[in-house]
Length: 116
Length: 112
Image (cartoon, rainbow over all chains, first blue to last red; front, side, top):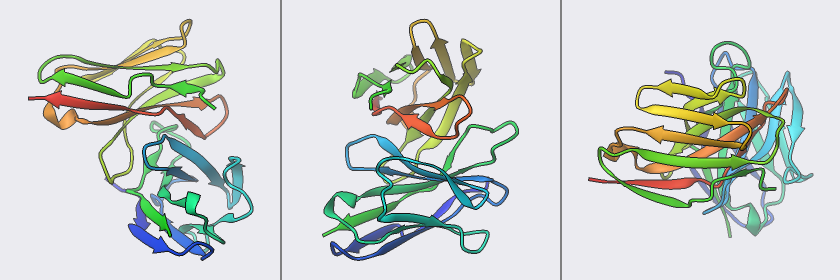
């Protein structure tokens, strides 16, 4: 079965540095998401992306975050100036948006970000 | 924001018995509910879903029940197997919206 792939699997960075997390969603999917899970907490929505623009974002997704789909296959999350509290597992997800599996999000394995 | 709650952080069940995981929600505008299973260091994996127009959906060993009047859903796994040991997340989607709101998860341990 096709899957969502994410890189890197783990990134360690210094506070204040920029980080880019990369995702390759499933090829025929139309909706893309970033979620995150701080250790021991629930999975939280960050942002959804459709038709090359943000369709919804949470209050967590402030000005230091941005998303981009630069080449039609990759979907990236950039954190401009990382803070300690950005340390979390970041999950990319995609969904076809139509058809039998509408509503089911397919998640990648996650990118663990550690901010020191 | 506690719109989706899983009040049991953990549950232990003997292998072969039924596992019942519960989830409560507060927003009556949720129209679609999903259960995800998550192993450590992996992303959530879709398990089963139910639309708000139904009260039951079954897929093999997994059955989800929805009680709209009580704003409650449950996941039944029978018979439970050791490979079912994982964290289970309940999630809900608002009408006309793609975003999922997740519960805090229940760690299920199946005892051989």
